[in-house]
Amino acid sequence: MSQASGTYHHGDLRAACLRAARELLEEDGSAGLSLRAVARRAGVSATAPYRHFADRDALVSAVAAQGYRELAEHLAAAHPSPSTPDELAAVAVAYVRFALERPALFRVMFAEPCDPDSEERVGATTAISEYVRGIVRRTFPGVDPDALSTTVWALVHGLAFLHLDGKLDTSTPEAVAGQVRAAVHALFTASAALSPTTAAPYVRAEA
Image (cartoon, rainbow, N blue to C red; front, side, top):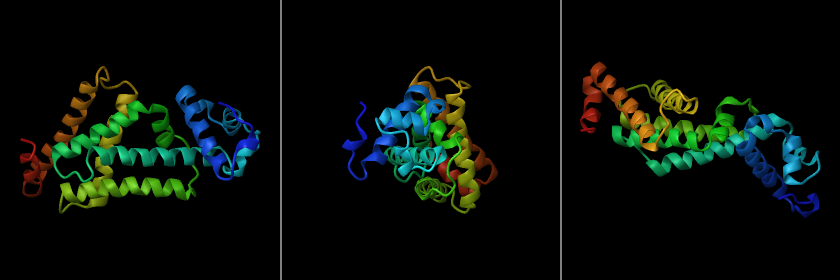
């Protein structure tokens, strides 16, 4: 797996460091993630990663940005533009499954300090935020999309961490999907009770 630093061509070192970081995450979690450990795994000198990453936060930001892009692709594959309870539930299930399939990466994305000035990370997180706002605009017309997108994201994100932390049943994929779908449909039911004229059509779509 290790390679001599001289074998890298221009532009390959950064990719090699990110691959090494992802491998370390899968094996040891974020506790084993450091520039020195990445250098050892990539087979380069201890100072080589600093050509692309000023410190650990910069490395974590780059790894997190990869995770956000992969998450966006995962959600879009579930449904590119959900607008009904069942479609939104499918996206929520995909979000939670992503977290369960890549727990170390997911925790790095959301629970590790990152470089606040990382344009790559900011761009990746903005894309996710816009995707969620788009869902809200289509699914809950007439409601403040910024406020409700935070609510929707908080619901699904909370479900992801409750499953990751063993607070909800993860014994089977069906159990996970059932819990997530129930939570999403409960949101629509509550929305219908509070505002029947705007939410009721979407509740009827569930039937």
